[in-house]
Length: 196
Image 1: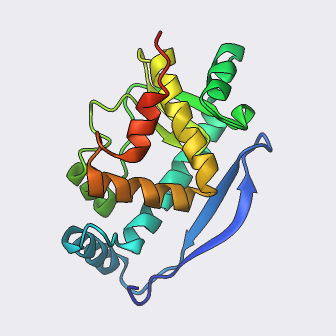
Image 2 (image 1 turned 90 degrees about the vertical axis):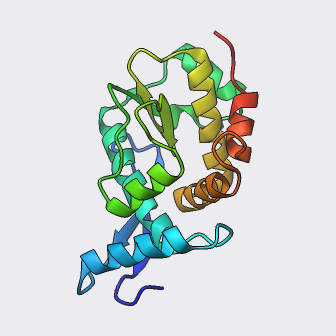
């Protein structure tokens, strides 16, 4: 682990509505945060694909946590039809899901995460939706049963994984090992898409 940068998983917090769980990750300050980020990017970019750098996963989880808070505050609850769709693809707690429709899916501001997303061809201008635990971003004009059922299946995968850190780590590892199209999580989500 990079000396001076310690990540701690702390308590599980609730969203303002009191429903959804999220893992809060706190990064303790180090003496030179820019150096830590540069080292983290370097370690990831040169890492063996079978051994993903834990620091990058932790940074990704922090970004996910920030997005969850935003979507939790501004996202919409599911309609009855959307709730039925979520249950159909296996979601156990559809009442926890929040959807936020946006013009563009936001990208991480952190350099290491941006490079990771670029390297994996993930979170680009063509991204239509992304699931972050119980929180989902969907691009305006693309909200339909096919996309929502795909994203709801990712919610199911998150529920099965038990935590954001576990889900994000496995998802990123799959993208690195198999690529987006052949990632087991993505194959599973496509197999559970409901046509419009």
